[in-house]
Image (cartoon, rainbow, N blue to C red; front, side):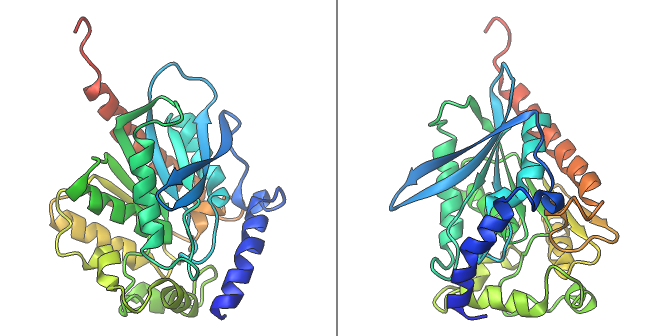
Length: 307
């Protein structure tokens, strides 16, 4: 596909992923969460967001910032309604899915800057959602996992502090070696992701002047002092070893990290619960992980009685 063809297909893909019919594949939202769409004003641009919140709560809530997949060239926040609404209702938390800018019109690092600037604005609770700024996590799927991991790396240096990162079949290497992993060769014929798709995404999203090592978490010299990480991926996913190697690197550098692989699960399985059963146990693991780290943070930050 050419850059013009990708751009032309973006709106069509977004409409499909937002349609009622596609929910047979992507799953119905949790009825215990309410969803709304809002826009956030950032320097030089205006981004749409898809917000999931529990229908009833009487306390301040953690913030989970969520990033969809699509190789930085396609996708929309609506494809993760099934997961995000359940995290909102059952964690509970305010879950904000960001409609970050897409390449080729907006090549990297635009999407990463969108994630970082949105995070900085939302911890100020500009919409009065009752966000606890001491209990913040990032969640990302595929290319969205790249964004989430890079926000954790950036927060290590500049803040704000993050409590957890949950990454679903993340893409962790956007350099010329992105296909040089055993899982890519082993699963090249599986649906959902292919070597040509990986190369197209890299070609259209990584401009020639940008050093891809700076957007590839696996290429960072140190992964120490990062928030705890959970990485889940399907055993049939070409990007499986991206996530596995990331966890190995995190552990080697002293960061708490866990990897879970699911048999018979392909790339994008978390946004396809209607056809890939592994999405449900993966969602339970993500929920348990986030609940443990976010609500322990809320309790530790709460003032003592009588203070």
